Structure formats: C-alpha cells, structure tokens
Length: 356
Image 1: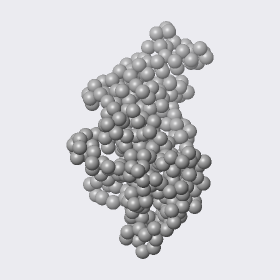
Image 2: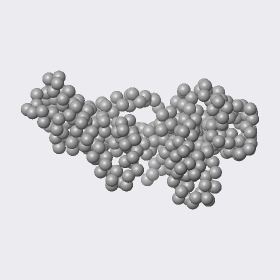
Image 3: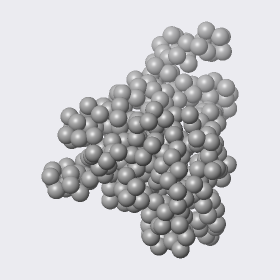
Image 4: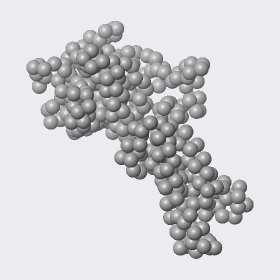
C-alpha cells in the first residue's frame, strides 16, 4: 500500500473541502462563483477539521473531550460556530479586499448566514464521521476494508511491536480492577501520538498488552518501529509526576520487535476484522515474554535489527541465540536501550544489574 504523507493527506482534505464549496455554488448560485465558493469553504471548514485533528487548539480539545457526551457535543457546536464565523468573515474580507465580490453591505461579508452554517456543518460532520471511523478501525485497516484489499488472504511482510505493562496484576490486586482499567486506558492513550507520528497502526489490545504493526518497508524506514517504542517510553517518563499523582506509580513496559512474512486476511460476517496469521506474530509474542527472563525492557530479533539503521540515541546489545517456546530453532536476540546507558524503562527486577 502506497504511503501517503501528511502533506498529501491535508491537500486531499483541502481539495474535498473546496469541492464542497463549488458544489454549494452549483446548487444555489448556478455555478456563477465556483472560485469564491471554494474559498469560503476552505476558510470555514479547514479550521474545524484542524481542531478535530488536534492541530488547532489541542489543549482545548483535550479539555472538552473529558466532558460528558452531551456537554461535549454542545461545546463542540459552540466552537464550530465561532470557527465558522471567523473563517467566513476572513474569507469575505479577503475577497472583498481583492475586489472579487461586491456586497451590498459589510454585514454580508462578516456575518455567517444560517443556511451557510447548516451546509458547512453538514459537510464537516460527514468528514469528521469518516475520520472517526478511520481512527476507530485504524488508518490502514479503514483503507484496506474500503478497497477490500484483504478480502482474499494475501502474503506480505510486516513488523510487529508487542508492548506489555509490567506488574499490572499486582496493581489490580492492590487497587482493584476498575482502577487498573483506568490506568490501562491512560496508558494506551499515551501510545496514540507516537504510533501516529511513526505511521504505525494499533492492531489490538489484549489485556494489558498492545499490538502495533507496520508494513515492513514502512516500519524499518527511518527506524520508525524502534523510534516508536522509545518515544512511547519517553512520553511516559516525561509525564512521571502526573502518573505518580494519579496512580501512585509510573508504568513500566516490556516490548519486543520482530518482522517477517505473515498472512493477512479480512475475516468475520457481522463484525469484520483484518487479522494476521503466521509464525512472525507468535515469535514476537514469545520474544516479549523473553524480556522478563533476560531482564531487559526492549528486545528486537537480530533478523529485523539487520534491516534497520538504528538511531544514534539507541544502543544495541547482542544477547546471542535463545530458545523460544514453540519454535524449532533458536532466535538471535538484541537488547535495545537508550544510548546514555540507561534502560528504556526502570529495571524489571530491583537489584539486578544489566550486563554491559
């Protein structure tokens, strides 16, 4: 699947938004002002989409996101009205200043008509709905289902990153299942931005573990799969005070990276899902279990590591070959840590020194 850059993505969104403005002019003005309609649509709609995608006023969005559903919807509508009104006024003043429109009064330039508000709201709502479904399924999964790419099983190469929360059972026994689930929700939320940043897809959450995947070429390019896990860990470490305040501890992670051939298929009738089959996934899961045995936070198979140019901020330690349960052959394993010598996350067993 061809990789779409963020710039291309935003250009596509802008094109769709501009086209909605042209359509509005065709419907209500007989195609007399297509350029003007496109300009108004871009100025009205793009700020809303930027807000929804957390590019504009990210802090405000996070605050209202924590509100009850009804209050959240009302708050969003209020913000939409403000953004639309400002965008409409900005576009009107620009076009007026360029002499492209001749309004009867300045009021026609700066006051958003109600029918324009309803049309713009409908277009933005439709686009936001598509984005939400896309985020719910995962970007790659959404596109793949849309074009039925995996309706017939295919063989491909992928990278998998398994991340597991250390001592989650002990936390649940001490604080209760509800509190443990709240912590997991916060933890998985912290994964979202690094995964998005490094163009991965969160395939699934299994108990206290998350499975992240990339097409192999994309995952190894610029060491994205490696940078992703260390970015996640850095994000948690940077927010240590907040974790201590909310949950009394900072999450500790175990992670494993492996890649290879797998079979990808869309399965299900009433509930569709794209799923992966093959030894690569099983090996990644067992490699993650090996983290505890070897007292390391992040492990990567040597096969995958050979295909990646590791960033200077990451140090590699060859741990040799190890037997992996359910695998006929031993697996060459490499431990990854921050290049300053610290393990990526706190040691799994206090008092045990990592080999140097």
